[in-house]
Every structure is written in structure tokens, then in C-alpha cells.
Image (tube, rainbow, N blue to C red; front, side, top):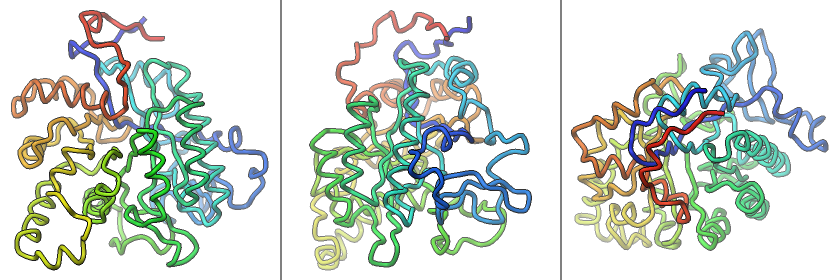
Amino acid sequence: MQTINRIAPYLTIDADSHVGMDPNLWDRYLDQEFRKNPDRPRFEEIDGVKYFRAGRYWYPHLGRHPYLSPSGQPPGPIGGVDPHFRIKDFMNPEGIDRGLLMPSRIIGPSYMDSREMGNAMAQAYNNWLHDFCKTHPDRYFGFGVINAGDPAAAIKEMHRCLFELGFPAIYINPQVIGNGPGEYHTLANEHYFPIYEEASRLNVPLAIHAFSDPYVPGHEYNWPKGPGLWSDIIGFPMTGMQAFCNLVLGGVCELFPKLKFGIFEAGLGWVPMVIERIHERQEKFVDSVRIRAPLLKLNPEEYVQRQLWLGFEPEDHFLPLFIEWTKAPNRTLFSADYPHLDYQPGQTREFMERTDVSPDHIRMALRDNALEFCRWDVTVAPTDKMAEAVPAE
């Protein structure tokens, strides 16, 4: 049997790697009531290209690269949908004890024009993810998905994710599209507040994953037409900045001081820049800040120190700068990003060998910060036993 390649002498946690989408998921898990609905989630072939479609939501955009390969499998390592292969291909070789499983781009329940379909989509995905995690329950932990387009249903599904399915964190889309301008909501809108109130009461963290755009017609953010590199290169950091500003300048952190947020796959390099620009306005444009951001009571880095976690990929060169500007090494989350192309085998060891951050900060990123973010207070403190090999299934 293959065993875990023990790289760190302590529990090691990957806070952001992705599961793909089993092509049979919706036929197996979607509620029977919705399986014949023309807007149901499904894979559809158009002009020889296979797309994922749910109502008006497409992945990828029409005319872009196909989602499925000619074999019918998702792109990249099959570990995105095969939990046993994932252990052998990624978890054990990288020395990862626990993996937090993030959905891929094709989950957008708050982008549906039908709230009911968005709710059914989230429930079906969560049931599939629960079964995925059950294959290795001590290794896999899911981000439960809720439909922010329907706050009441989202709260109900949040409870189910926590108390029935056993997920330690919740994933929300950073915007609700709705059926018109009046139904478009961002993270700072009161539409989200019931979700924040209940998540704060339950002490469950909310994960916001950066995507380049919602993949809904009319919401492409004017990206240049072409191979899509523009959106990949700047779209993810821009989404991270938008989330950060909604939470900090929009007053969400001030109104919900105990609520923990995670911002993932946006990198870290933009954080010092945004902090510096907010500082400048706090110092030079006092009246403007008072009028336009009336709930901004602290410096931006203080909100990071209190309640904002940020995922980073292990080669991120801006990690030392982030720590310098935020004074918050306890708010970084190691994110391997498997099975995307960003992931490179051996990166856990390379991260352990970095000399531009201290061994304490490395340990915090690999273990301590995720334990706090996920409320794993009952986790047995790492001992010498953690250095023992963990057999693969």
C-alpha cells in the first residue's frame, strides 16, 4: 500500500484544492422534480464542443475551450472526480493529511434565474460531495455550497451542510445575478445579511473563491475576446479585490465582527497595494471616506488580523510582503490548487524549504491557520504520532 510522504512533522492541511464535476452527477443526485426541467444542470454538446449548462449559466462561455475532453472526462488529473486516485496522485505524495475541497467554476447556484433550481443545484452538489468525502472521511472535508440568491433556503442548506453532512465551512458566490438590475447583489448588499447573521451565530466560516466572471451572458466584464488569458491573469486578483473592498469598505466586517471570511485563489500581491490606497484615502480624503464608507472604523489590515483569511499558492512570491503589510501571518492558508494546472508535484516540499518566510510562518500556513479557520478546536494536538505514515485506502 502507498503511504503518505511525511514532509512536515505535523498535521498538514491543504485549504483550497478543487473537485471537478462527475458527468453523471446531475442524473444521479439532482432531485427528480428538476431532472426534466429544460434549465436543469447538464452537459451539452454544441458544434462538437461539450459545455456545462444550467439555465443561462454556461461553462465555458460559448465559443471558448471545451469543458470535457473527447473521452468525456473533465480536464486535468482524474483526481478531481475520483477520490481514491486523488489520494494516490496528490494527497499522499504531497504529504497532505487533510484537504478542503472547493467546487470548480461550474457551481453557480446564485446565477440561476430560478431560485428553486439554484437551491436544487446546491443540494445535489452537496450530496455528491458528501459521498466523495465519505470515501476517506479523515482526509477529505468539503466546502458546502449554498444558494445566496435565496437567503432563507441558503440558511437551511447551511444547517444541513454543517449538522447532517459534516462540512466545516461554507462556500458562497460573490454575487447574485437575479432577473434584473434590482436583483443584482454583491457581498456588501443587505440581501446577504441574513446569511452573515446565521453564519456568525453558528461560527462557520464563509469561503469566497475568486473567479474571473460569473459565466452568465451580459456579465463578462468586457474582457477582450480571445484565448481567455486576460481573465485568468487579472480576473482572479480583481475578484479578490472586489470581495475585500465589499467586506472592508462596504462595512460587512464592521457589522459582523465575529464572522470569518476566506478569500481564495486571488493571490496576495494586491493586498498591500489595496491597503496602502485605503490608508491614503483615510489620511487625505477624510470627509470622502466618512461619507462613502461610513462603517470603515479600523485600518484595513486590522480587519485582516481579526477576521479575514487569504489562500495562497505555495510559490506566491508576495507572501513575505503580505505578512509585512498586514502583520497577520496567522491569516494565510496553504492552497495547493490541485488538480488545476497551477499545481505542480513537489510543491509542499518546496514551500517547506522557502527561506523568505520563517519556519513558524510556514507551520502556521500549513496547519495552525486552517485549524482556526475551520473551527477544528477539538483536533488532537499534533504529536510525534503525526510523523507516522498514514496508510492509503
